[in-house]
Amino acid sequence: MSREKILIIDDTPANIDLLTAALEPSGFEILAAPGGEAGLKIAAKALPDLILLDVMMPGRDGFAICRELKADEATREIPVLFITAKQETASIVNGFRVGAVDYILKPFQADEVVGRVETHLKISRLTRELQRKNSDLEVEVTRRRAAEEARERADARLSTISAREAQRWGLVAFIGQSRLIRQTLRDIERLHQFANTSVLITGESGTGKELVARAIHHGSPRASAPFIPVNCVAIPSELAESMLFGHMKGSFTGATADRKGWFELADGGTLFLDEIGDMPTTLQAKLLRVLEDGEIMPVGASQSQRVDVRVISATNADLGAKIAAGEFRQDLYFRLARFIVETPPLRERPEDIPLLCAHFLQLFAEEMGMAAAAIAPDALACLSSHALPGNVRELKNLIERALIASGGKMIERKHIQISVAPSVAVAALAPGRETRANAAALAGLPLNLEEAENVLIQRALEQTRGNVAEAARLLGVNRSRIYRRFPQSAES
Image 1 (cartoon, rainbow, N blue to C red):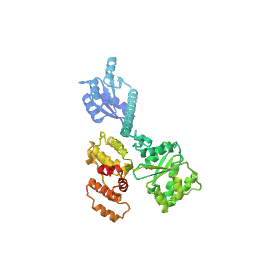
Image 2: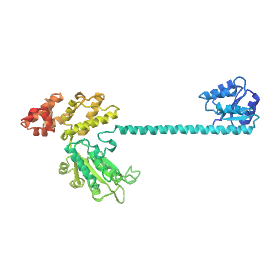
Image 3: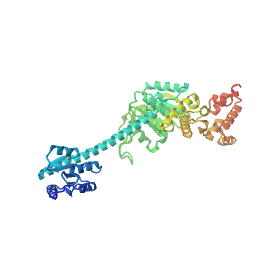
Image 4: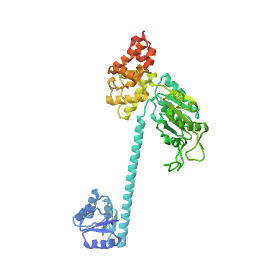
């Protein structure tokens, strides 16, 4: 550890010698300057821990030297102790006024000098430590303030249409006023009262099945307990039982500690099993046992344990067909589907598209730091007439891309970048036909999207002999879309 440095500024060598003799035995490193100008240079270069300064010196006196030391940022914080034979009150007051911390009168006692030097060095150390802690505290306060401001900015970005995404798992998160979405909301509200009822949510990909599950959970008495979402497709078959029910240390290779499974983590709350139709059949039997008994058996455990878990499952598959094919247990289906909630595809509720567009425009604009952009009628008409096979998820992506393409300005038709997968278009034109035939039918379509759509609608009308309802069913679109393209079809 380096020694603390004391600088003595005095034009009398005898005084320097006396002070050095008094301070060196205490372990200080002594620096000496035979006058004020030399003292300033040494102080600026060596940056001592404390300065002993004589008042009466030729040229500039100690008061002037002290003023200069305090004016320099490098030496401003160094404590200065005056040593002088002048005992006038005015002189002492002047010493403190120019920045000194103490005043030692000559003739001085060695013990007194050492005591005062040690005291002021200790005060200086404590002051620096306090300043460092204050600086650290200021950094932490700044960090927390920045985090709070970031959180507030994040809150401010939340959708005004859905009454803040912080509450998005409530019913306010559902954008729409169509009959179908209102029916879904009524189902969710009913389920709030039945906190133990198993629920099966069905619907196409992108229709918001997890959102429905979270709304059911967060509106129920289980809201304060965990909501644990699990994607059944992503469960490794060799770890499935352990991940669902947990395991004990040493129960298999790699089990280095006890591990809680998803059921135990969701105790008191809700376990959401997404894509339940893809759960391995071997695991289905074990899941059924837990649902019926309310008990889990961790891998390697000697006894079961009770859990209080509501199970909500979801699927976009036809579970009836899977049951018929022996891929899904019928008894498990009846246990999961105590109540069924259907999430409607967006093509069946086109009247909700403008509201959803406004919602996503607001959400993305605020995330990107832009003002909310408007959407031109022709762009909105394009989105409303599109089948949107990806449903709300696809619409959200389309709006985000359009907002970027428009640079935050008015979104026009040219900013809507719809890409239709060939299989979707062909399947809509001729469902159930072989892939080769579908590909041949697609080959004759024009590359222009609107012209291709017109051709598909015309072919569908020809096949159904002008029956608009049947043509709409073949194409998987709303009849209003056909009427917008071919108004004359409404007259036939």
